[in-house]
Length: 479
Image (cartoon, rainbow, N blue to C red; front, side, top):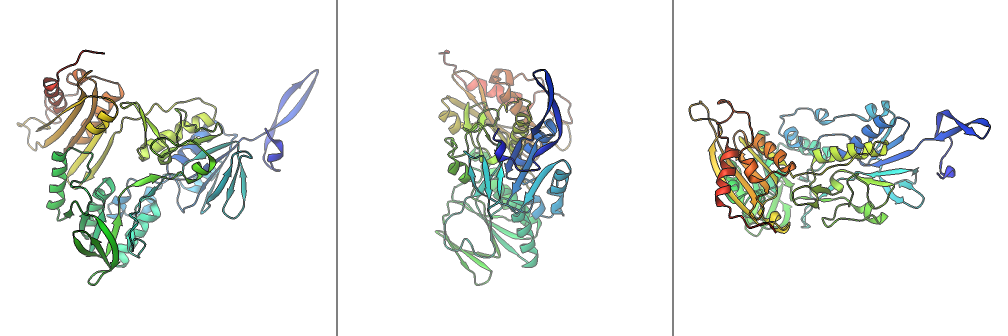
């Protein structure tokens, strides 16, 4: 350890006996310094776990924004006023972390990192030495690069201040109309949020279907739900500029014409925020996110990365992928914290489970779709079945669409998609466990599932879909 790097006050308040030949002396041990850049989900998870595992660590967490340790996924429900108070989204305040010994600094940004000297320099010039550095820098919104995207009333939704700003703007400006550019998860959830806030909404999408990862037949049900709730959908549309409106605050110029609204949300995706990592010379994966190993270490032994800025191992495709979700960030943070705290742990990967709600629909998926399966070297075959969640004899039955994908060469179960008013997410969770365990489609067809008429049929839709898919498959001999 470079003792000169440690300033006065960095030592432990206690000493340990050490044998010195025939004499017994006392030696002071220095605290290990851990600096965490980023306070969204992965950073606080790392800090909390590392502090629990090794209370002697000197942990500093810096966050350039105002909030730390908040849940980003519920932000549309906060904007739609289902959640009234933004404080409900905060899992742990800076004060709570400080009570636990973590030095939390908000409104502070890292300017650069000197890996050779192991020092983080903050904007303003302050230097933070470290033994272990954790990058939890998250993602940044993709902007379309069109004139007027920085006008007042144009928003992205990535961090809690964005959600607070959108909600405040809607109220103070008395917004009656909104345009959402993009039809992914956030775009769809914000349709419901705007409608809950009493705002007439138009979705502008460059593709033909929303959430294009889903089967087109399932996507058509999403479109129907939008139309049923008075959401206008403009498909195959390219945006060109944002101008001052005549009847509303803003006007969006597209190749399909001009539309006006009081507020515009740009929800066209995110990219990993890897500026610091690139400047440090850390290896990036094929996805553009920071490359890590199963312990969350980067290509430099003193640096970890967690959350949306880094990759995760996909257990089905057996490739490193970038899927920015809060639950993954929390798990990666816990693994990094365990390792930093002296308890070797690995993050075993993901299977790509994800879900969202759109008005009265549950929409969920797990594993690979056909394109991803082909890219991973499989020979995908799929089917889509529609069925009742519970027996017809039970009042209130609902229909569910379930798509399964398997490898025709081996019979390996590869992925699933589901949509319906009830039961889609629970079945995708079950099928995620099947993917995690590496089951074949034959095994999925005979899964032992809890049966009771109020909840399911004797042959659940999972069984029916798997057995139907087995009939379509012509097995190739194993290679």
